[in-house]
Image (tube, rainbow, N blue to C red; front, side, top):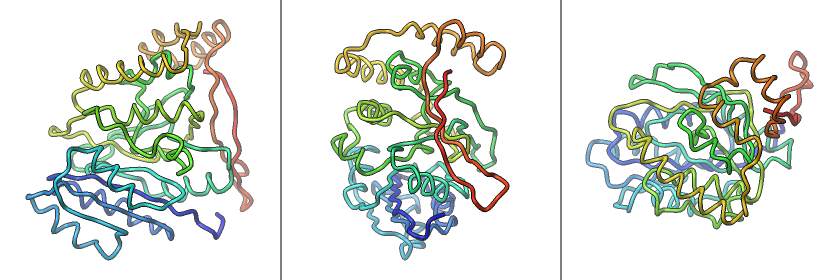
Length: 296
């Protein structure tokens, strides 16, 4: 990795998550990334969260505990205090993996054309932080987004694994839309796709925690909001359904996970065009990243 580590800004919004927030904080700080700008915005918790945050305040760029109008308001507030070239947020019950920041920073330091990236293998963990497995997505494409692929529960772009450059954030109004209760991330992705394609990477980067109190368990509400966001984006982009929209039906059946069927579908219908970041020279000290364009 280059010695000039790009600064990464991470915001954690939190409200009454004392049972999880310390694990979230440690999943970030324990990576020992040398140019980290970590910000925690607490919504005025009364469950002991503030005392936990104070334990780590020497390692924080900024933190506060005060009322806000919701998760996305808190995240926007946090990013207003940030200066990093690379940005993301991590909710206070989710996790980053030990290699996450090093991987993202190295890719973005080497590949200037990559404005945002995410994993092709989203992770999940349970209440006690035990890993319950990793999913598999075939790829990312603006046309597939417009066709509705990523509004499906099996194909959601994993927020805790998604990183972007500040320049892309600035092109997208430098804020997450706050009018949505659950799908603010989907609204941000729709803005990002208007400016840049999303790159996939095979390495897992984050874990979404399954726990009974989380708002995002309401997948039907998320889909309702995502449908509204998609309609607005389709108007803005003069969207026409591609012939590959047929893939959406096949995607619901998870047929892309069967290699022979996936190849057959792509050969018949053409498929979407995606970009993947791959690691080369794996067995030597001269490893490097490159971009592969492919169909799915």
